[in-house]
Length: 128
Length: 459
Image (cartoon, rainbow over all chains, first blue to last red; front, side, top):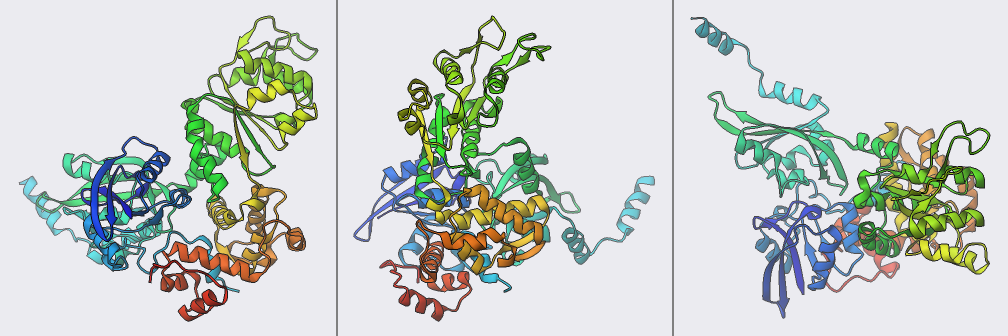
């Protein structure tokens, strides 16, 4: 499995749409076999996704992401786990140990429900 | 002496209490937050809560980049620049991503915060939501961009993927699709992504004008060319300059005009009516049609050579009934748009309305869906759109559904639950909350509807 994390000052980048550097970590048999930092500055959003796909990223752990970009990435074979924050290696460890639901990894405003957006969420608030 | 008196007067002036400062900040429409020297938020007003979607109690104490999520956090943080140089930033236009994943255009201003001794203790950032201004600008000037095309459909995503490449090239583009599928939006996005973005974007509806009028509209005329031609009038090809010209409904033009267009496409030249001088067109040509031009070529109704000239890059925009997964996104998009444009506060649609909208066939495509939502906005000023606010014909025609619709309520529920599960990273507790149902109800529905969960889920 290969995981990509948009990285800024060793932290998860605040906005995936604008992220320029990605930590790409490859795991085999539960062990980390490779970790590189790639710079995608100057590339379009679509080129960044294509490049991450080309290096085999299966999962992107990221911070905030616009619905538009979320849809673009989700249409590829990459799983996107957004609204995360914190130190990149700590977030990676938490992902591998199923610990990402902890408050310290979730961006403020997204704690009550990890959501990408409301979508049809309003249906559930209906006043019928 | 005077100085001393002034200083005493200042210190004697009654100062505002924290509660009073907070009340003032909460009464203003602009978002305001302050940070300490470690970039942790120390105060966050009501407007900031509303614009970012982050409650004050979750924002205070956190790093500003995790709360504000601005396009410039990583590269050119305005507060950082102010804290380093001491110079304020005024009205810088950026965007943030709010808690609903929406890109919110804002303008920001920053300043230093100092204590009574003049020591820097942090910074203050004020920001104004420009969503309405931006929406109006787009509506007025057609400045739509790539991201205004709302879709998660696979075919649309393939278009998104090649759109920047198409924009970069200068080749003619043919956009085919039924009426109301967003062909013009795509053409505008291509223009606004291209090097020609600072030039003019002109749209000519070839189907709306009689042949001779269309000819003078496209190529212009010279004074005296015909009875009422008192002075020269430049045509659209000339007016477009180095911009882009969209020939909408190109399938409707006559064979005679097809020959003239072919010449523009072949060597970029044309003559205005009654003119003797050949002019050069430098505009990029995008053609769109709701017909199948290849079939028209086979039937002899459209010139083959012209078809091959405009069909350098072809985009086929699927009708809405073939991209039903986009209906929820589009509904939300139009509700947001009309809330901004009409100053209303409609929060969403009722479940039975969602069912009707998802199963409807939309002969008028996205434009029809937009009209349905606008219809509800005329009758409603707030709350949730329920069935009685839908146009009558939608309610009566819903049974005509044929293609790709949900055959029953179960199919619909399955789709809704699967979408919510994906959205919440397969975490069933979060999904149940998202869907507004109890956890056990969700488990039962997952079991009864035969929804398959991935081996490793988000529990």
